[in-house]
Image 1 (spheres, one colour):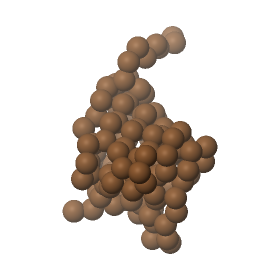
Image 2 (cartoon, rainbow, N blue to C red):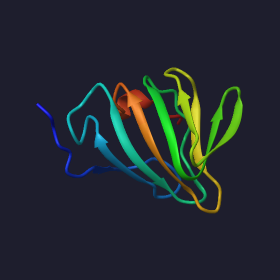
Image 3 (cartoon, rainbow, N blue to C red):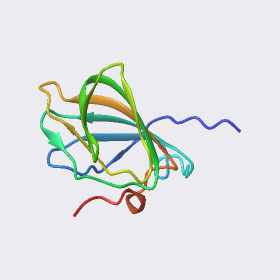
Image 4 (cartoon, helix red, strand yellow):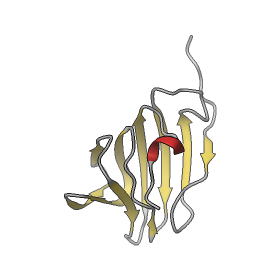
Length: 120
């Protein structure tokens, strides 16, 4: 049966500044464990702790620039670009640019605080 998602659930974020995480599909909003899809909006200067998640994360930047750090280096991902962060790889996201960032994050399996393994 097709399930309509009328609205997202706003999930509390990690990081130094308020960021909006609107989960449309995932463990909280739809009870879906296999995948999560969230619309993220982060302000200029936002940074979260590094993480080594137990899920693959696919990120599509819609607006602004998302700064992505890995053990191999760092990159700026601009509007219209995407990245794949494989499970088990350390990664840290931030939005240092003046206009912040707006992006879609897809996690397989679905995001969970128990699976993200954030740095202390």
